[in-house]
Image (cartoon, rainbow, N blue to C red):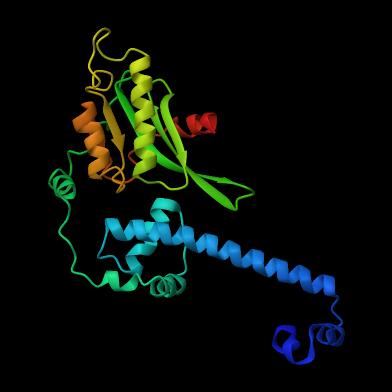
Length: 254
């Protein structure tokens, strides 16, 4: 009511009529501006994530973007809000394209179904296999979140590499892998002298789920082509990850 009538009757007269102090009025104005800034920051972060999903899946509409946001970042968004924001951001038109053909990697995975999981039933020795996944970390009283990626050796419960970032994306994954590769070389995995850059990781098995990050060209190039790694994929989501010791290791890292 003050907002509606203050120009006509003046701020002081409106406040007196409603029995509201000037201090209370200004406090609420500050809170309103802070809430607006917070909403803008949240929507900017959400837009960045939506754009990343769209770049990976140009044919996705809001119905398929919603579960992707939940799977990658545990981002729960009301479908009406997402539809409104897609229009506001002028992104909805990008949905109106023909469904692209699956990537070459997805085609390989489709043809390899039933043979992708190389670690099921295997008890590897230390430094023979690493398993990885993203974990959400809540902080600031649960209001903020980050993402942790750990490369775990289940046989020894050692985490040779880990990285934290704002998004569970390829940049975070490659940063984690670079740390892992360096640490494996430092502990002497591979030929002891005059070894090549790939010797520390050659023949190593890296197991993950089929998240878009782990099936991207950049990630697989870094592992297979540049590091001589053998990749293994869960065929039943995270249920097939060898995570018996993962929660303990994550607690230790955090």
